[in-house]
Image (cartoon, rainbow, N blue to C red; front, side, top):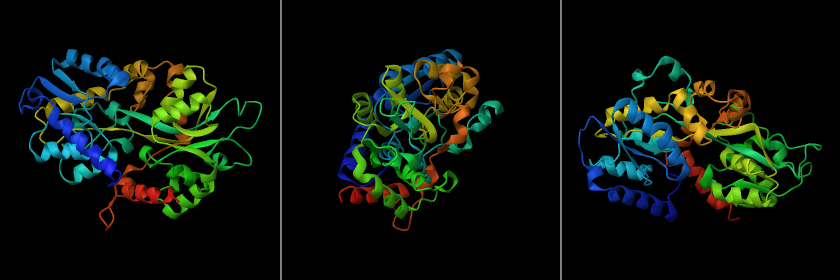
Length: 366
C-alpha cells in the first residue's frame, strides 16, 4: 500500500522488491503446473493459523501442493516489479485496498472469478470488501478502548468519539494513531459531529481543525499495534484508539480495559492474483475456498480475526463470535473505511491517501 513519497517508504518499497528477487529460483520458475500454488502468507501465529485453517485442508480437498512464502511482497512496488519483469513469483498475494486500486488501474491484476462461488457464500461477503480484482478474507477494526479502573462501571464511560474528545467530561490521558496506521481522520470528523454516512468525501480542513482541539491532550501518537498494546498494558493511556485484536489479547490476559464497539472503523486486507500468475487457476480455487463460511470460522477459532463472510457465524460459538468485530450485532454501530475515496487520484497525481499523509506530516510538526 502506498502512503507517501518519504525516504522511509522508498526504503520499504525497495525492501519489498528485494524480497521478491530473493525468492528462490525454484519458486520463481514460470511453470504451468496444474497441481501447484504459491501464495503469500504472514508469519507468526497468524501464518500458522492460516496454514492450519486454509492451506492444509485445501491441499486435502484439491490435491494441489501449496507453497507458502512469508516475505513481505504485497506492496504496489513489489507486485508491479513481478508483473513488469514477467517474472511473477507468487500466484496469490496479501495486499491493501488502496494498492489494489493502483495496480488494477495499470492492468497488473487478474480479475476474480466469482462464477465459481456458491451464491450463498458470495452473498455473505459485503460488497464493500469484494470487487473485480480482490476479495477480503477477514476484517479488523479500530475501536475506542478505555481503562476500566479509570472509568469504572459505576461511573459514566465514554461511548463515542465526541466523548473521547470531551476532556472536561472524561479527563484522562489519550492516545491516537498516526498516519502510518490508518490515521484518525474519521474519528476526528465523528468527534466533530459528522454523521457516519457523510464522512466521505472527507472535509480535510475539518479533520485537522478537530485534531487541533485534541492534540494537547494526546500523550502519544502510536505507530503500530505493538506500541499501543504496550501502552494499554502499562496503563500509560486511559483512552485510546486501538486495533480490536490487540485489545482482545490484553483483555484475555486480564488487563483492565474494555472495547467500545460503537463507531468502530472496519478495515480489511485484500487477496489479489498478480497478472500472469502461472497458477492463476489454482489461486482462484483457493480464494473461493478461503472465503467459505466454515473455513473462516475454523480460522477464527485458531486466531481471533473476524470473518468477512457472515455465514461463518453459523459455525462459531456465540461467546467467541461476540469478540469479533464483524459480528452481526455490531453492524449498525460500525462503518467501513472507504478505500475508494482514499485511492482517488487528483490532478496533482496524488491519491487522497497520500494527500492526507502529507498534510499530517506538516501538521504534527507544528
